Amino acid sequence: MQEVEKMVHPKAKESTNKDGLTPRQLFTKNHENLMERGEKWMKDTATSCTVVAAFIVTIIFAAAFTIPGRDNDKNGLPISTKDNRVEFFMICDGISLGFSTVSVLMFLGILTSRYSEDDFLEKLPRQMIIGLICLFCAITTMLAVFLIDILIELHKQSRTVYAFSCLAFTIATLFIQLMFGLLVGMIRSTYGRGIFDRN
Image (tube, rainbow, N blue to C red; front, side, top):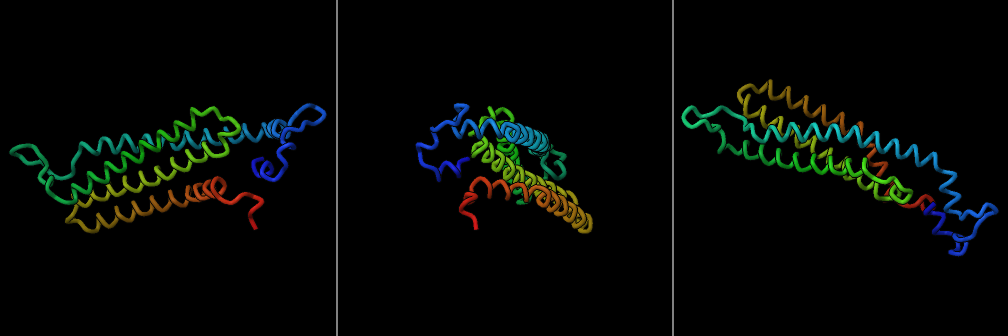
């Protein structure tokens, strides 16, 4: 609709047919089913992603209060608090918590949207794009937190560390393959060239 509006004369936008409908009103009437399907897809996708993001928030929040390494018998504090890996663990944990929280907020914004015709043009896709990017980053940093924890706890058992590293890499690769196509498609359709500008 937006692409056609750019091409027609302004007066043609206000003209009516024999039923008294403007071109925009007629378009909305003929594409009600498309809006309903788009709303259902948005809600289903946002709901699924919200569950994942909320799960990450819960895990990462708990991990922030569980510093890896053995405790000192004298004062009860972790022995490895001065270790650079522990500092990196806390940084990655904080980054993951931030990204997953933003992701939850974006998906909740989609679920509570009015789903008007104009929302589908840019607002809802933008929220979905930001939510998915933040979810990618949250999962990546969560896996980094997991690997750092394994590295600190099992630093002398190189085979176990290597096995867990391969597992984390496989999980990240699988998630990216499953969701990356959706993300790229949404970016192209929202911010790419119009359908009449494409070759």
